[in-house]
Length: 232
Image 1 (cartoon, helix red, strand yellow):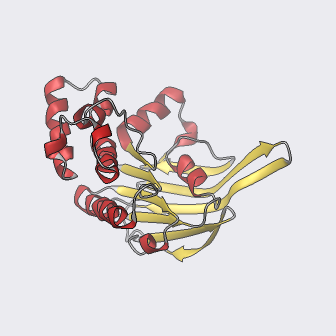
Image 2 (tube, one colour; image 1 turned 120 degrees about the vertical axis):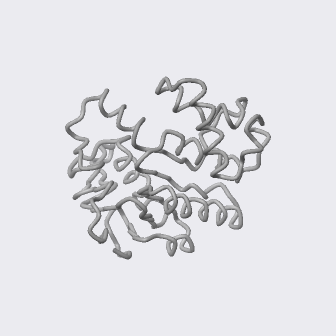
């Protein structure tokens, strides 16, 4: 995949993930390469069960490959211990989940500030940054509203704001429109594309929706865990 001479923020080289099952070994992903630089969106497509979530878990350092390497800003994550790996996730990677992953009893602002609390960011800086990212996703007026009172699309935008609040280098989004209707899903995907461009993020988004594939700078299609086409 070409990155027009830019050093990649994310590289996956020969990624393979196998699982032991009572029926024997099952290979969920086999020999997949990916690459994304700052300001680029990689969309990973394929049917359910193709290996998209397994691949994203490896790229986001939530799971280790059976074979192959993941590099974030040139750092091979296999060489990192648990504490250093947790620091890398906290400081360089933002995650967006299909199920939103929010605490319904908390306000939008309280949900968004969680990563900053984990970093022990001072309160005044937290408040400023939370307001800033909620404005980026068009929810500045929802700062003090509980997220369980928001629509699905608004909740996902809160999730995106939370992913961005610590200024990550990499955004990893697993089926971010999966629980949304098509119109709302398009709005959320438009937002992701805009943020990749304006914030200079490298992003990888998994989807099973063919219409979303055209939004990527690069497209990787998976079938039965293997690369099955796409657009470099």
